[in-house]
Image (cartoon, rainbow, N blue to C red; front, side):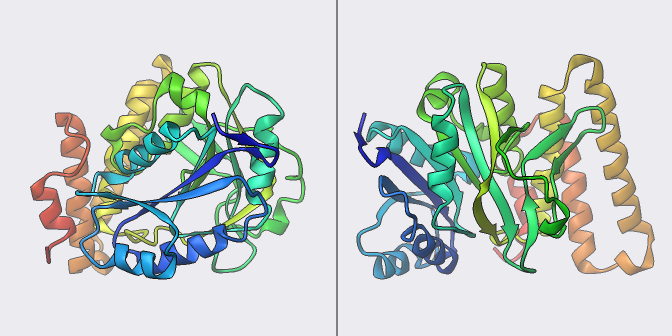
Length: 322
């Protein structure tokens, strides 16, 4: 273990895929952290552009782990987490590249984590970059019976939540910024590759809590998030993974007495959306046809047990120009 008087060593794992500008901006904000004992690690997830060269030109001293292929969010981050653990990190901050961090964020997160050895994960208040002072997540919760997850305060003005001043337990932390204790990863492992992208953060926290770790929200830790900058919030790829993985998560993790109810409600919501995109005039466009097809393929793959990276037929729908 590496430890100094400045506090336990924190590796900051930042996953990049064809998005050097956001990664460089994220690294610049990380360089202003007032917590000194941290080490940024960029994991390039098989980028096919000049990302690595651009990041190195901007940040010559940054360690970059280059992966040959795009392993997805879960496995890509796991590669960085593995490197961090092998180098003696006591905490890993998994940080999306489309984020900016406040100088005091990491100090606040480590302070909360160090206050109680049972805390395995802790996350900050997450704001949207635009519009200003709008929340993305102030802790996250699961509504098992509804088959839904909730980012508290999402897209609402922060001023409407004046009571959020003290650290508290939550169900999970949105994966765009979460500090994880070494012992948690050694006990339960990393992110689940079956999810590839979306809901792996929810599953990780639920798995942690089942093994006796606590998940906490630290309101005084601040960061900003560009929502779905890599894929696009309503892209066919994001639609596919969100639909397939919400079903996978609730089927695998909901309490037994609520499992069928949760999955049924998700299916009804999804079928209503597909029907609207099929029948309503305003949705009869090429863009919505692709979204509809992505949703239908997500349902098919869930029922056929196809997880991990999307198959070639789904790629054709989500990325028709590749």
